[in-house]
Amino acid sequence: QVQLVESGGGLVQPGGSLRLSCTASGSIFSIYTMGWYRQAPGKQRELVASSTTGGTTNYAASVKGRFTISRDNAKNTVYLQMNSLKPEDTAVYYCNTYLATLTHYGMDYWGKGTLVTVSS
Image (cartoon, rainbow, N blue to C red; front, side):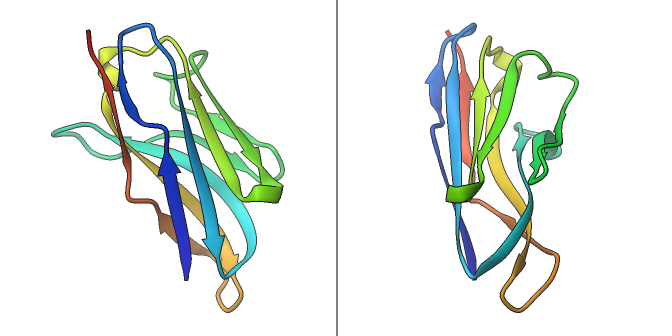
């Protein structure tokens, strides 16, 4: 079993910043990617940013230049620094990881989500 624990969501004014964190724990052999998705009310879940263990990052066009994903591989932790937040960034943010466990290769895990609300 693998668990993902997210933190850092909350209410912030437009133009403000938040930092999300997500730590993976459990029967982890090797992590390939960690990333963040979000789902706004009435919309499909979408990729926000992802990071491979090798350091390759990928961002949604809507957040490029405002959000930064980073990882602490030693701690199995991924961060999402969100700056210049806009009301349209309001969503539940989900942590995701693609990894190998002690018994399975290529497993996909999700966190429970943390709510980010951008509003004045």
